[in-house]
Length: 244
Image 1 (cartoon, rainbow, N blue to C red):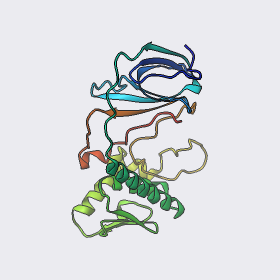
Image 2: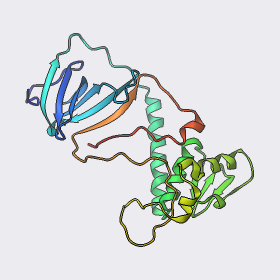
Image 3: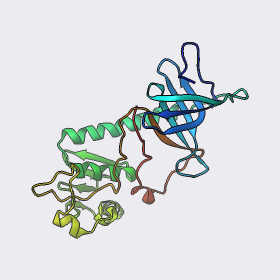
Image 4: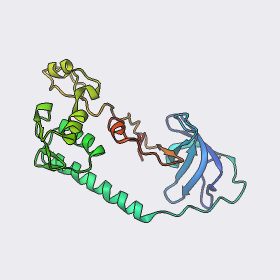
C-alpha cells in the first residue's frame, strides 16, 4: 500500500515493512507515528544479533516506497511508561555543557588532536576543563599543546597516571614509530606534501553517512548498562547511522 493519505495512520503495535531509497527493506513493529511530519518509528530486529537489543529506526515516509502493513494491531497497546523528567533535565543539562566545551575548544583554535584527547578524558573524568588551549584535569594535571606525553604535567598520582594511560598512543593501536615518522594519512586523503604526524584518537572513525535522509538507526537496550570506567574510555559511543 502507499504511504497513508489524509485520515490514514499507522497503529502502534502494527508490523510494517517498507523499502528505502537505497533499496534496503525495513521491517518492524510500529512504536510511534507522527502524521504531520510523516515520521514513522519502527522497532526492528537487532543488527548486532543480541537478543536483549532492538534497532529503533526513524523512517521518513517521503523517502521510502512499498509501505505495507504486514499485521495490524491485535490488541490495545500497553500504557506508555512514565518519564523521569528530572533525569531528562539532567541529561539535557549535561549534554549542553558538553557542547559548550566543544564550542569553546573550536573558538580557541584548539587542534583536532587536543579536542579528541579532551573528549576521551572527559568520558571518565568529568572534572575536566579548558584553560585557553590547556586541558586541566581535576585542577591537578595540565596538558598543553601539542598534547604529547611530555606535555602532561602534574603531581605524580592516580590522576596523572590515568590521564597518561588514556593518552598513550598504544591505546590507539598505533606504534610510536608510525606517529613519529608521520606515515599516517590525513583525514582528507589528499596526496602531496608532508603530512602532520598525529595519533588517531579515539580508535574509531565515524560511520559513513549515505546522506539520503531516509532513516536513522540507533541501538536500544532493554536494560540499562554502564560500562566499567576504565573499560569504557576506549569504546565509541553508540553509532547513529544516517540522518534526518
